Length: 111
Length: 113
Image (cartoon, rainbow over all chains, first blue to last red; front, side):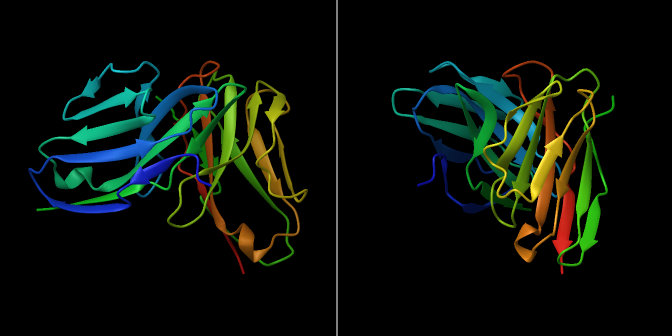
C-alpha cells in the first residue's frame, strides 16, 4: 500500500489557469511534507511543511498542510508553460531522514 | 554556487557487469542520500549517510548494491552483476543539517542491456 498518494496523476491546462495538486500521506510518526518540481533532470525543492494550517508561498506557488486530514495541496495560479513538469510530494517520518515519495502529478500547461 | 554533481550522467552496462556511480554533494553538507527512480515513478529511497556513517540502508534492493562515503564527502554507489531490472535513474541528494531540505543532483541514467 502506497504511503504517499498524489492526485491527479496527470493534468492538462491552458496558460493562465489555476491548478490544485493533492497529496495525502501516512500519519505514523510524521515529521514533514515536502514538494519538489521535476523537469527532465533533478527534482528542485519548492516547499517544506511541518505545521498545520500555515500557508507557504513563493510567487505564484503556494502550499498548505492539514495534519488533521493528513493531506497537503500545492496551488499554482496564472500557470505558464514553464510550469510544465512533474510535481512530487514526499513525506519524512521520525527515525530516518529518508524521503518517501508519491508517484507525482504530471502537469502540462498549453499555450 | 555548485550544486550536487553526479557522474557519469549516462551509463550503459551489459548484464553481469559491475558499475560504480559517483556523487559529489554540496560542500559541507552532512547528510547524503541515494534514490532510485524508475520511469514514470517517484524516487525510491536506497540508503543514506550522516557524514561517513551509513545510518539506513533499508532500501537497497539486494546484496548486489553497496554504497560508501569513506571520508564523509563524496559517495559511491556500486552495483555488482547488474541485471536488467537495475535500469533506472539513480539520484543523489544532500542536506546541510539533519532533517533539512534535500538538494538533488541531475542523476545517472543506468541502462543494463
